[in-house]
Amino acid sequence: MNVQTPVEQLKPADYASDQEVRWCPGCGDYAIVKSVQRTMAELQLAPENTVFISGIGCAARFPYYMATYGFHTIHGRAPAIATGTKLANPELDIWVVMGDGDCLSIGGNHTLHALRRNVDIQMLLFNNEIYGLTKAAAADSQIQVEHGKKLVFGKDGDRGLRLDPATLSLEVVAIGENGIGEDDILVHDETNRLLANLLGAMEHPEFPVAIGVLYCDPAETYDAAVHRQIGEAAEKTPPTDLNAMLRRGRTWTVAPG
Image (tube, rainbow, N blue to C red):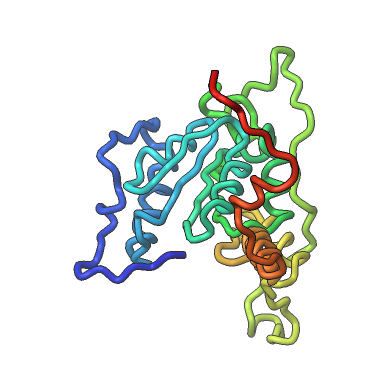
């Protein structure tokens, strides 16, 4: 991330644009945009080096509300466009904003490859398990219907299959109770993908919701590897006169008239 040290510290309001926030009253997206603005102020991120890239849906309005650079793209393709942006300028701090349908359904393949390549970007998933923009259609991440919630499951009411997190066999305990000590508990290791999957699958109310760094891939990022390869190729290539390259071999002189 590009951190600046201005004479006057930026405040959360400095990261908010002059656009009217247009989400439904009571939507949780309001809390997310405010949290991101506060986080940026705490880190003193440079707005001119920050880009928010979104796809389509309610969450995709996010770039309009940030006083940074932004790109409202097409449905499900935000990770691909963010990858290209990062390759073009690795110094940019890029945030991808997606809803659950944008990220997990039509954009599932792009999300997968952005993760596979380990692109140095941040991805925000607004997962409310519902397609609010399409009038309460059930999302692919929708696992169970809460009591009293009305959802649309297609014209015939068929629920179909949902993306279901891994089945857990964990138990929440307190150290010191029932003879449980530190040796009896599972300690999280952010480089352990299996443990990260287990933490990510925990859901309220059976389990607490895990917040923080669940998994950190220690591998080289995709954009860093690409620019390293470009640098290595440039070092192995002798200096070349472009004019000489254009004029070598067979050439023709076009006479006027």
